[in-house]
Length: 294
Image (tube, rainbow, N blue to C red; front, top):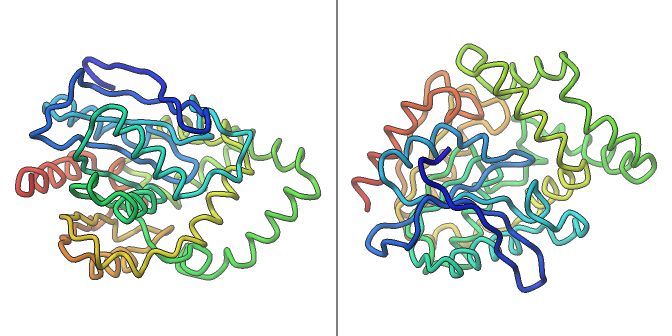
């Protein structure tokens, strides 16, 4: 992903290990570091095209795994997977690396993490790039319906009554060609994103527990941050796709309208993952934002 990378672990105050990769030795304090935050049961694979592009363009970059995800520890205490705690992990990691100013990039749930960081650690966040996210409860707006209001309790009941069955189905779902096709069709632009990208995505989803998904899904319903958004007086670029079936882009327009210094960019045929659909266009727009604002 990077031409020259340094991978390591950061130990949190509660003794969890946060995995991270950076492409710099010592921070150039004049330029902000780009910190990438991925979405709900996603991975840094979703930032594949952006991390490679901005590394080659000479930007300082930090990617990481949230606690309870992949190479980081913490999956044994799912109740600690809260947005305030995850934001603190990122902020503490930045402090450890002597990063004083960062542009936070978030996709989907990563937008919630960016907003939490801007609220709790305003001195750290110099700007934000927010892709396909929302500050509203996903139970009420996901797929532009309140369907998840009914699905979520059923999922929770399954985890409680039949945990092993649910975990088995969750971990092997990516092997089902029907599920792969469904995800490809509803979450991505099928003509632009390869089947290989989808397979890698679903394989990594299977590595995370169904309990991790449910905990973070509920965090996306509980986060109460609307009163703080108007105080986030940093440059923000809000990006979305007109064909986002998961978080419709009118919700991103609402977010942009609340942010004091926002600009928007919407792709005509973009899906919920426009940075994978049209990486060149997204990279160009982010780079323009960075050049003008920083």
